[in-house]
Image (cartoon, rainbow, N blue to C red):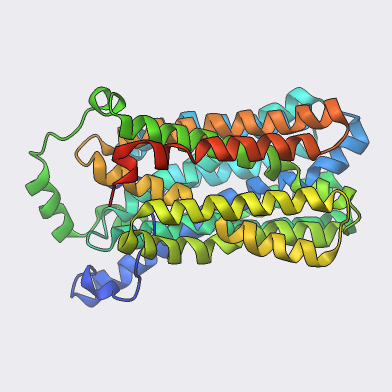
Length: 426
């Protein structure tokens, strides 16, 4: 279905331009956006809390860092590879079943994690089941629902839903760290699981799912008018240097970022910052993407994606250098600068790349084409998370990981300058 993907947010000041004139339909469209934002916040926010469980699990079980980060890798891989199937399920059974099953999976995963004692169980619950749950409540169903209610401002609607990931991280990660400080990791997992499971019947009853699934009748008419378009096929798209360049950028950027992200809280604690400060820094860094996605989406539409993406790579590189410096001299001022620079650069590239893919390969198969890019992004993230843990085990520190991450980041920026189709794209 066209438009079923996260894309960059543009101007959000004139929602009335694509909300139907009927007041009830307008309120419903806003309610739909609020619900997909909430579920994406719950899914990504709860999944990112794994970063603050690394040290408690390492202390209790003696598992290596690579073993622990591999659990995170499994979650990323499952979420990426299952995304196309979630889209098919959404089209067949509707949002009610998909969203509530996803929230149930997340609740059960956290509840069962509180009882585990083996690494295999963590792979199963916090890797496989969490990956499934996040995919079921994430951007694939969000995009499928929003495309039924927004047309001219679809980019802005999906962009705002996309920022829920950063907001969820800001809310859940520091809160989870506070819970860990007051109890233990098993109790914390248990309460997260109980809360999510308790929310399932509430959201099942109070949300008008049938009304949401019906969509805007005016948009349905427009979709029927466009249904005769043939558009791109996956095979044809994959043969273009445009597609291959986006694939390299998506995969290598996520590989670079996830060498650092899963261990960033543990790293800051090891360098002498308090657990709450480390978790808050992690959350604030993620939520900065709310600002950056909105602003840079607007700039990308005005001046083109290349300068915006390039600036984001520079900011990310500077953030990695600041982390490296903190391994020699960890002071609060460096942490604050890192949070600002790295945070404003984080989350910029994925929505813009998604928008470039959507516009270039527009047509009935646009979601399929984007789905393959999304899967490559997940593969890169999983490889990066495992590599970061492995480098920590081999070297006993984090500096090697920072160096490798920076090299991969430089390589991922090459296509936007080296490939003519990307360099000249507007």
